[in-house]
Image (cartoon, rainbow, N blue to C red):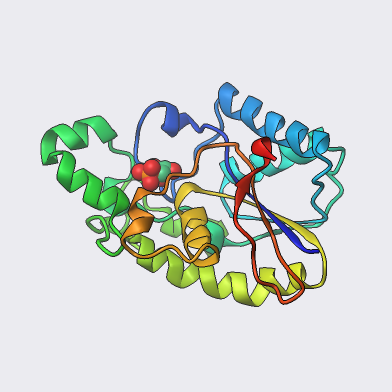
Length: 228
Ligand SMILES: O=C(O)[C@H](O)COP(=O)(O)O
């Protein structure tokens, strides 16, 4: 039966520095590298071995996938990269320190920007320091200036339906290496979580989450691979 593995990238440099990251391309820390390798080792130990891979255009997710695949001796697998699996765009908050932003705007406002379903952070100024708009990897793509979870879902789900689901339905074991909020978008859909309840869902770094699908492509309950 088809199996889906979701993994959030290991700790990034800006996770460590507690800065809003979004579409800014930061690398993994040493801890993040270790988390990615441990995820691969866990998949190997549990014999949950992907046969097809999807990831974003962002280094932290791509490297996490590669490190995990290396642990499994599966660097040879086909990998599809797509911007629609990128992290939610953090708008004008990108690059700011999360604690300093709380001190300035209050805990409640920052919680709304981080976890509300449909309130996007303030827009990023075009051409500002952390605007990825001129990056060649986004040529031809309408780079957003800010995204709520709702807006993130509006680009993750069509990609899931058109490109990932058919591969999964053909019987492959699919791994998606992505980001806290692009994965929250998918989990919301697959686990039927309401707009209210999704605000409480956190996805830890480097912990593979698994869905087993039945013959009708209905997903079962999600579980952490480490608990199986
Ligand atoms: O983009 C970021 O800063 C993180 O990857 C996710 O941040 P969050 O926990 O504030 O959603």
